[in-house]
Length: 169
Image (cartoon, rainbow, N blue to C red):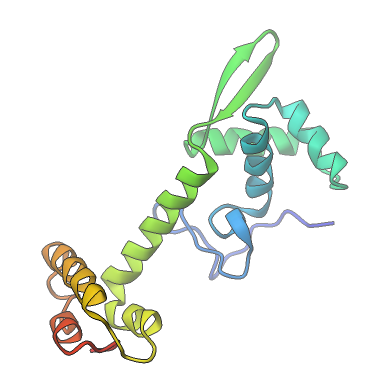
């Protein structure tokens, strides 16, 4: 059984409350382990009550208190990933965006952040052999232009990458 602990250190939340957990798999790279499990259930069902999510987790062999599931779902609502509405005596939770839209948004922000802070290293990993064809050169030039406007200091060396077709400046 997994323990629900919050650690400090490399997984401490960033100022925006975001963290990339590179050792985790799937959506858990962007959310806490339990938040990811809850979101997967809600995405799969389209909408769910706390009781339904609690039961699905139990069906998966996970023993978790009902109040813990409630807290996780309330936290996901505060983060803007779920919204709820009253239906009788229960809250029904729905995802604010699809799983695909969530991944697209998180991956895009992660890649943009890496490109802004570490453009040379990102390019070295994208093009390890240093060969860049004409189509990729055009794309790199567009990326460089976009990020040059945002942060000129970060983009030093990109022009050489594009001009010389190298993977690293």
